[in-house]
Length: 333
Image (cartoon, rainbow, N blue to C red; front, side, top):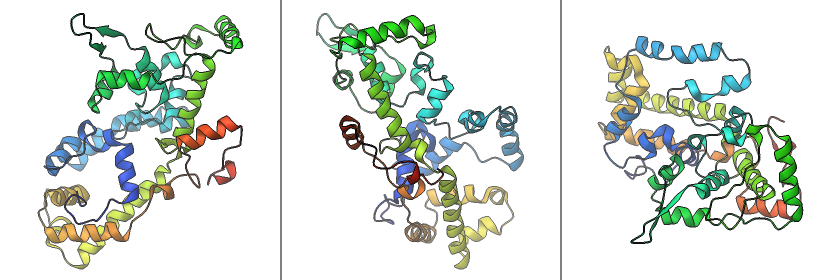
């Protein structure tokens, strides 16, 4: 909003990246508002509630944490009110690393695996117009919501690599089918419109790039993000805004932080609502100044020294070279 109103010349790197990565978490239906900011905020968080109501609403999450059996359960976002986005590693671990157990609803649209699924969607051709349409699967609906037509989806998914001509591929897949349990059985990643079966080797190549993207890639690096550092930056930002408003005795701050009303029960929520309502131009200018002074980038909140782009990762694996950074580049390894 501060950028749209011209109070910031350009977005702050960290928060702009958070918005892009977690659109469904921070916006209703994943769409950033351009006006009616208060209504959009209330549509996401609902009516302001008392502290007792908030405490009761968090009871399911507390029970979920108490019943956790391992670290994966503790990190599972199922019990969260807002943030429910899973990393790709969490999606696969939740399915016990069996592709057949992963529902379309849990697949990020930006992954190669999602495009494999899109290539398998049943197609229907209109006898009169000849136009081809896709069945309404979850992935298709999400792609359409981003402005893609069925023709766009078909064209994009058709760019997947074709069947490998390596004669050993069929032998490998036959061996896997004979030894794997039903849920792990390797199936043909294709449909009646594909030239051939999407073979195992190329399938694994796509998944490798998906995992690179999740762990240390530029596309959707959710597993590389230091969430504690982001939370700390969020707290510091609010504290900086509050201190600046307090120093100049801003009337909005005085009303919320020194008053005696329902506004004081959830001070930061109330401050956010007043800011989004553009109730005080001075308050917005002060907030913009703090955002400007505390500019920080996404790259400063990840576990790695840098991130790999898809082209770089593809060329690295093709050449057989080692990745440009290893465990020593990770701040926790």
